[in-house]
Image (cartoon, rainbow over all chains, first blue to last red; front, side, top):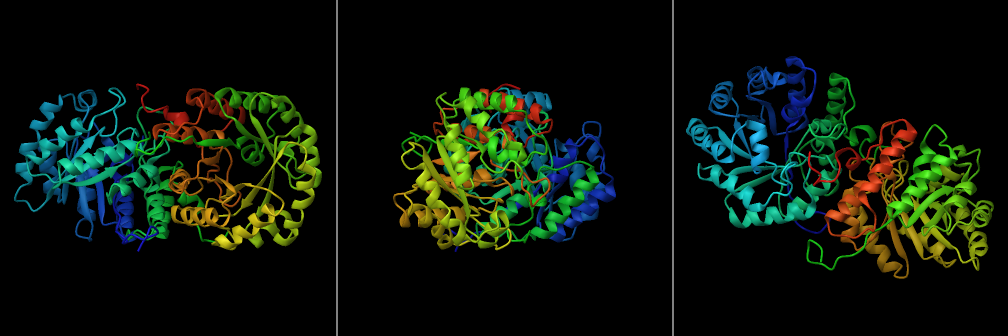
Length: 305
Length: 305
C-alpha cells in the first residue's frame, strides 16, 4: 500500500537522455562513452531506453553513431527505443535492431511546420509506410505527440488537436502514445484535463507523459499525471537537455529526481538510485558542465551529512 | 472555481530570500541594494516579507544592517518579519519596527544542539521572555520549527517531536507556526501525514510551510501541502539560498516559480509575475551568479517565442 492507502503501483520510466539530452549538447559525445552510459543505465535497472535517433546525420551530428550505439546495447534486457523521422530512418532503425520506433508529429500546426517543414496532414501521411515497415517485424511503433501541452507560437493546444494526431496513429494500429511537453508548458490542470479526455476518447491507448522542467514544475506535472492514473513517464539522466527557446532553461525532468520521488511515495521503479546518481555524476564529467539534477548533488534524504 | 472545481483560494506567500537567501551568500549585499529589492518585492505585490535577522553580526555579517533595512521598508503595506534568536535580538527587532518576530527551534535534538549549542529543552525556555517582550507591543510572534520534515543527522523526525516544539510555543500563546524543511527532506507522504496530525492536535494553530528544493521536489511538496489544505508558504526570490551540507544544491523554493504554478492552478497570490521575474533578474545581477529559478529564464508559458 502506498502513502494514500492505495495499492502500490509501479512507475515505469523511459530514459531519454541519450536522445533528447545529447542532441542538445554542443559537443559530440564519443560513441564509447555513450555506450558506457547506456550500459550503466541498464545496470541501474532501467528497462526502457530511448537511446538515439535515426535522423539525418547532417541535422543531428551528435547522434551520427545511432546504429553502433544500438548494436552495443542490444540483448541486455532493456527495450531500446529510437526516434525515426521517416521511412528511411525506420529502415535503418529496424536494421540496427531497435525494439521500438518512435515517430513524432506536433499537435500544433506552426510547430510541426517549423520542426519538419510539413503540415500536420502531410506528416500524418508518413505514418502508414512506417507502420507497414514495422508490421511483422516483431518490433513496436510508438507515437510521440509534440507540443501536446502548449506550443511556443500557437499558445494553448486543445485536446482535440492532440486527438487528431493520435487518431492518425491509431488508424495504423499504434496504441503506445507519448504526450510531449516540448517546451515545458504543461501545468497540473492541463495535464489532468488532457489525460482524462484522452482516456475517454481512446480507451485502448496506453499513455506515457514526457515533461520538461523548463518552468520548474516538471515533477509537479508528474504528480498531476499520477492523479490521473498515468504510470508511464519519460525522463533524462541528470536532467539532460535544454530548451532551444530559452537560454539557461533546463530540459527534461531528471531521472534520479523522479526515481527518488517515486520511491518516497511508495511507487516501485526497479531502479537503483545510488547507481543512477553515480551515473549522472559520470555524465556530468563526460559533458564537462553541470547538470540540473538535484538529488545527484544532495543525495537521498537519509544519508547522514 | 479552480481546476478541480473547488472554490478558488488565495495562496499566501512569505518572501524569505532577503533573510534565508542572503545569509548564505559569501559577499555582503550593500544595504541600498537590499532596500531596492525589498521595495521591489512590495511593489510586485508581496504582502509578507521576512526581511532580515537580528542575530549576532559576528555570526551573520551579511545581515548586519538589519535595523536599517527594516527602517527603510516600514509602513509601505507589507508585514515585515525578522528572525530573532533570543531576547536581545527581539528587543532590537521591536525597536527597529519589525511587525512579526520569528523564533527558531529545531524538532531534532542534534540539529538544535549544532545550530544553537543548546538542548531543545533549553531552547524552549527562551520563548517566555521573548513572548513577554512582544506582548502588548502590537507585534506578532511566530514559531519556526526547523528540521520538521527530517534532520540530516537524526534522519526521520516524528510528528510527536514537531508537536513538542509547537506545544512550547503554544503555551506562550503563539498561534503562527512555520514548519521548516531545513535541508530539503520533505516528501509528499511526510508532508501529508505531519500536516494532518498537527491540524488534529493543534486546531488553533495556523500552519505555514517552508520548503527547500534541495532534492528537486520543493514544489511537489507544495502540492502535497495544498492537498492537506495548507495555503501559506514561504519561498525566496529566484530560489535564493543553498544547503550548507550539499555543495551545488539549491535552496528555498523559488517565489516566481511558486507564483507561476499557483496562477496556473487558479490560486490567487496578488503578486505580479512579470515584476517578480524582473526583480529576480536584478537580484542575479546584484549577486553576480546564476539563481536556480526556472520561470525567470523561460518566462511565463504564453509569451511567444
